Image (cartoon, rainbow, N blue to C red; front, side, top):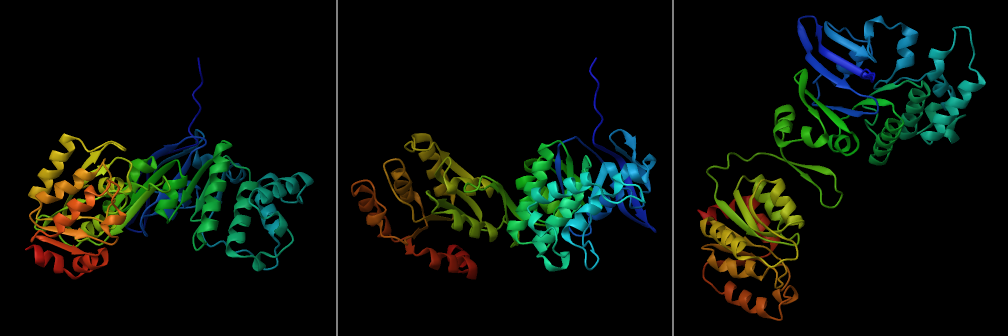
Length: 422
């Protein structure tokens, strides 16, 4: 019969009350060995309070916390220090200490009060200083290093404690992006070695990129818990942060990305706009019109195209075709139906080939059409002149207006576009 290993950390109905104010309530989750958990949420959500409580440093008023199957409150100080390492915000390091001395301080759980550091402690400290890239700073005063170097020294101290659980309270705060990513990568590496890391992060995108799991706190309770894709949703961001956003996979980086915007009122009464695009020509148009709360549709975009990704991220009623295939009859019909029902159609500055020339012929259905022209059609025509001939016929129609993308953006921002549609 197999033995079930206890969770690295188990929290059941945890609550923290200070005075008459409930800071945390009904917090429950479990974390397994090797997980890299990012704790995210707005300021005042109780993230630091949670981490201090899990370390036994805060006043937990209710609930149960277990570490590897043992009650947190039954662990003695030495046992706790050998089980959980905690790096808090704004660590004050005394004047005159060298980097090596700071890292060696992480070995205190393994020493008697009268003992000095042994050769083994030096070996371990130097090992983690090399791991975090600060070995060359061993004899340098911590007052003489950069912010990024200081954080890596403090991380080496935490790692030198050699605990299976590591708690980090915003270790990347105020650091440049390169140093922030370094800290996250170090955490990923130690998790691959079987350690468990809980890290409070203020940068949602970085947490989503590196953490295997996210816990979203708001109002003193858990709003969402799961993979980054499960937690970082439009609904959760609005509920926790009050953000109006679009959440999507960035086609360049392959990472989850977030576009935030200020809501401009309800979309129900705004004009409807259909965007014909492709090849990345329509992305900025979609973003700006979405920010201004226009009701949007689009097509025919090819699957995997940047415009298709943007359209999906912003929830457009979009017609999506297969990559490298000619627009078929069904896709063409859906595109024309949406063009015909839109108050305005925008033909972006896209290139035309045999696969997508139907997008150009579909534009003739529009009752009110804006054609974006940043590059002459002759330079965007890969159909031996067929697209250019259609294009010149199209722009001569009385209901068609030709303008640059800059002119179009200005009309959207100033509200002139909506006035002209109405």
